[in-house]
Length: 133
Image 1 (cartoon, rainbow, N blue to C red):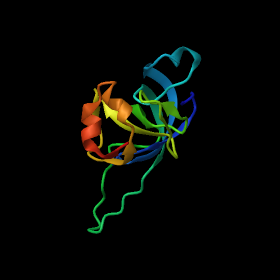
Image 2: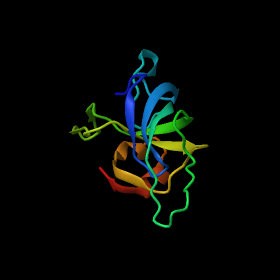
Image 3: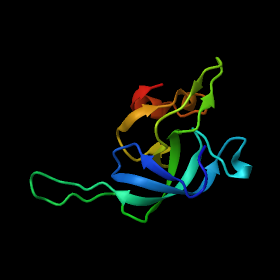
């Protein structure tokens, strides 16, 4: 579960590397007490941006800058969650992807993505992911 002020890894190729959770937009049953889970929409502040190195020498302009406020979707959490078949699943890190008007900003999603996103209506995210667990 994610609290406010939690630092999240950004798991897409939008240019951001780390983001800090500052608010919740759409969430599950624990939102009133400040906990957010996979498939919840949050508002984040970009804390760290990936450095861009181009081989041609021209400058590559990122869409994402440090300090930008963006919407994000939680795709992995360290806190274990119970699945419908009784299994528990957890990941090694807390991760999100940046979204704009329900569409991902990046074109690829790095790492694995939780299958619970299918139940919350994020099938577009699942199709972009490398692996769904």
